[in-house]
Length: 102
Image (cartoon, rainbow, N blue to C red; front, side, top):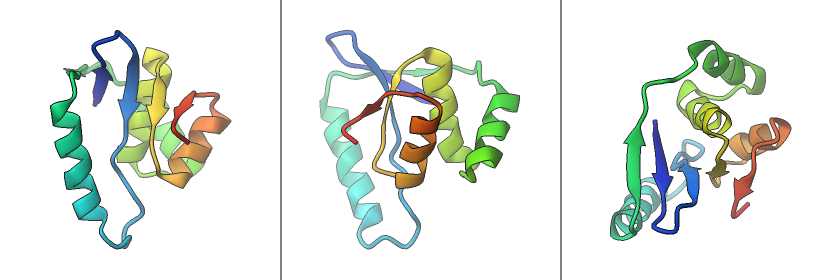
């Protein structure tokens, strides 16, 4: 799962998921990715995922494994999470993970 580091050294996880069926969600993701590509962001594809924690988060908050992976990443790396997904944001708050822009 990717984490991002802005040129200033701040680290945060970015989640581009949304509730299925939202109008324009594909276009919004494409636009968000295009914006991100223009930013001075470095991606790290760490394979140190704690699978037990990941599945526990998914079950506890009824998240997809995909969404739970962002929360697990934020916890493991002790970084903030940026998401507009309300269920993921609620789970992050419950887990005391800092949210950006929510």
